Image 1 (cartoon, rainbow, N blue to C red):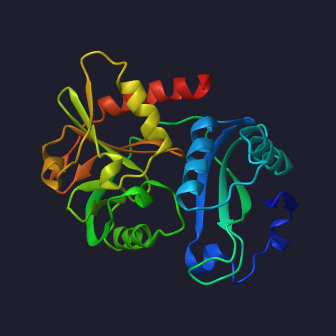
Image 2 (image 1 turned 135 degrees about the vertical axis):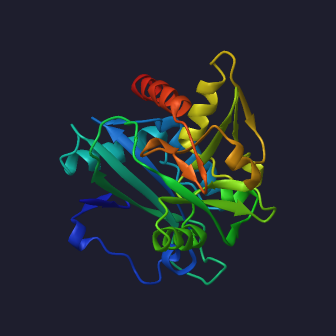
Image 3 (image 1 turned 90 degrees about the horizontal axis):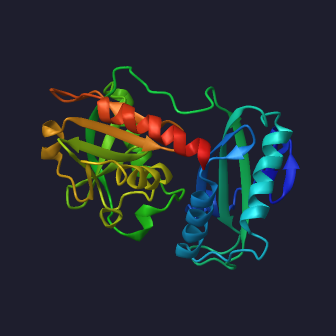
Length: 281
């Protein structure tokens, strides 16, 4: 089942018009959400990021779009798909109502909610080999639009194809200043000694949910300093550890970049703390 504007529809009957603005112009924002046994993980952060994204895109937020209303919409769909006692992945997509060309006829929105099953209830530490490379064909623009999740993901799509063609597990994206911004599917963290760095939002990094949680966690750890600062590609091979974060996998350690192989002790420790916070939050 899929939720289309508050109505539950069977997957095979869930359709949108070819003139849908999300399809035609990428006039759409979305959230990828993790639900465990009927509980939305980090729901408050997801809700406020969605509202901020809609405001940045100048979408009209419906009066009934309260945290409680949207939470109920999500949980009802999870239940209808018989996943209330299972881990689930939810995509909540908001798009502007059909009409107009670049300039929309209306600022009002519609939405769709999809759900699929996940295999594990909490984040597991992945010890598999994981190699990354820079994707330099196209760049992420620094600025506010790059910090939100829109349907304009051409760079991520092309980077994913490049990674597959060259047998990389992931690629790291650069902004117009040639600074590291993020991975194809999440934020990037660099560990060097007692310092951990992650690119600032002003460089164009996504305002990630797990990124925010880890910034909070790391600040509570004695003898470790966290910095939101630009990262040069030259710093990657000098790092002790690199890892990627997103709401579905939690923390993905990077084991190799070019000739450098990385340790994983810090990322493993942080993943334990992230799981605790997810259970309590």
